[in-house]
Length: 233
Picture (cartoon, rainbow, N blue to C red):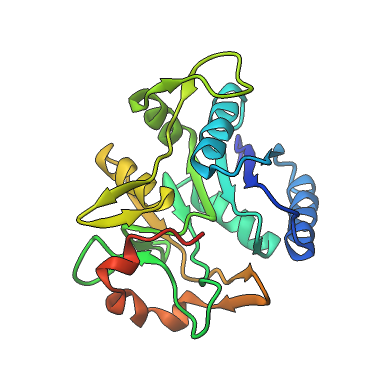
C-alpha cells in the first residue's frame, strides 16, 4: 500500500442513513491507523447522478489521490473490506463488490458480458462485464482516460468546463444506467473490471438488504439481458 492515497466519492441528494455514517467513521479510523492519506468528497443535493459523478471525478483529477473509490450513500460496508479493495486496486485498475437490489427475493444487478464461464484471476476476483458501481474503486489512469475521451461541459456552479464522464444511454433496446454505461466505456478504452465475491454489503432501504454474491453466483448465469442493463440505484 506504499504510495496509495484514496478519495471516497459519494454522490447524495438525501439524508445519509446511520449505517452508512457508521461505515464511513470506521473507514476513516482504519485508514488513519494505517497511515493512508484519505479524503471524503460528497456531492450533495444533485439529483442528476451523472452530473454528480462527473463533478466528483473532476475534483479527484485535481487532487493528488491515486484511487477514486465510489460508494453510494445507502451502502453499509466493513472498513476491512474497503481497505481490501484498495489493496486489490494496486493489482487491478477497476475492482468492486456487488450488493443486492432493495427487493425480495434477493437479486443482484450484474452484466456478465464476458459470456460463458466466469473467469477468476489469481486474487479470486471475477471478470464481470459490470455491476452496480456503488462500492467500486478505480485507479487514476482509468479516470484520466475517461476524462480524455469525454466532452468538456460547463456545469452550474463550476467555473470551468469539466469532462462529463458519466452518462445514461440505450443499448440493444434497453435503457442503461450510468453504472453499466461506465463499465462499457472503460472496456472500450481497454480496461477490465473485476468483482471481489468475498465482500458482503448492505443496501439500505425500508430495511437493510444484505447477501453474499458468493452464495448467489448462480444468478449471474440466470440474469436476463434486460436486467443486466439496468442501474442498481
